[in-house]
Length: 219
Ligand SMILES: N[C@@H](CCC(=O)N[C@@H](CS)C(=O)NCC(=O)O)C(=O)O
Image (cartoon, rainbow, N blue to C red; front, top):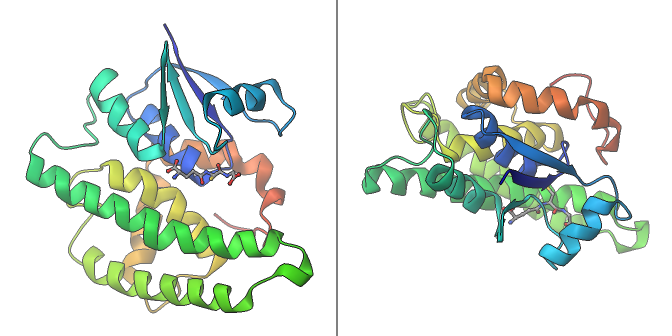
């Protein structure tokens, strides 16, 4: 039975799962979430009441959370690109970096974007400043780490890079990485050249007007 992925092409967490699918050319049926009234969105609401996406369906099984989807694909649809290393010690480093990108790059980035979507009188400038400070701290830490690495966890492209790619892409649009973090900027460029992410970026191009802060005229 074909895997089904409920997703939107412009969503960063969905791109994280798409990268894993594209890395190993795993076939799947796209279930595009074209707004809250679309059939796919109604199905998503039944599958996962949190209505967060992506969600993967494999027969009777529903898999939530982008990291778990990537782990699931490694177990049930493995291919030549191993996104979680076999060695548990190497896998721990991959999972550590994966948590870093979710918690300290994506979370503050989404907080800034969510603030822009609030009604004017419910905005939270203090929260935005906190999120910007977290991003600055995260960029500085990552810059040191990436001075020694090609990919997030070392030599091999992994689960951690699947998240890093879209999260750094949108983080730079939201709160620029800047000249003070050349290793992060160079890593973001390497990610943009990775064919799996380049494909996800291209598929998301038609939706750039959706970016609440205004998308810059560049990748
Ligand atoms: N922890 C979830 C986060 C997923 C997530 O936040 N997805 C966003 C799209 S990028 C979403 O569902 N937004 C809709 C909403 O917040 O209602 C994961 O890792 O998959």
